Length: 317
Ligand code: PDD
Image (spheres, helix red, strand yellow):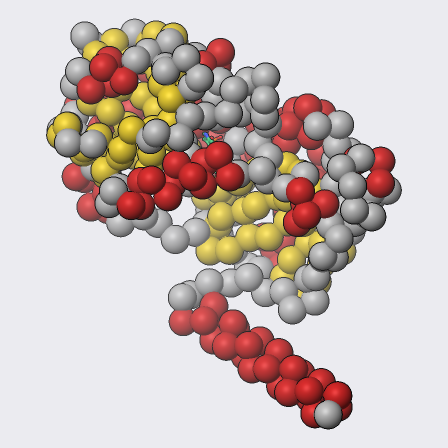
């Protein structure tokens, strides 16, 4: 009985493996090689323990990066933020040059040009219990897959957002500046968005001021000024956010970081959100309030794309 059961299990495993590979191929995805701890393994070899505290407690941090023409955009900023997030939770991450090399090897092994890259560092394997010292070694993972662009129609027409009832974690609870594996706060807001037919949710902070999206930072044009919640609204210090602020200022657009109410957002003339994968995503609707995709949004996105080209060229030299 046991043997038959074991055989069934092994067949099921093989079948699911074949299925996965086929799915990857059908979707045009490449996820064959993964950097795990200190070496490259295939995706079927890439296993972590059920006692990993990342799995048990969401104890860990991560970064999402994007490559353009084989160059990781804003790599230094992402590695810096990874270290900062880790320091917040007293997690040891490998040195930047090790992480950079792991990313380089992962991209090369998978032959990727325009890729989505994720670095995950968890507390590692240890006995049950919250004490971080139970885990002697963090788990370090880099995987990359072909970047699948969002539909052009989203950039042309904008996407729908909702104002979520779920509030963003207060700064003195789980500080949103930690890019942590603990994503339930944002997942609850994402569920609200989905239930209401929207792509993204705007979360308010404890005080009722606009904080950020579930995976993005929020910007809006009001009275000819580009406004965005300041870091003390309790948000992730988005790398795209910082670049957009700097591009706007360098190109004659006044920018104001501050504490803003939902009413401000609803009175805006243009709204967009930013993140590494979307760049600048125009918003067509928040709850029942429609917005046009305006000039400022288009102008900033053009500047952003020019900046990407410059960055990639500079990196090659
Ligand atoms: N998310 N706010 C939150 C909560 C985020 O998760 C993200 C990024 C951002 C934007 O940050 P950046 O511009 O550095 O990408 C803001 C990434 C895309 C993710 O979770 O995969």
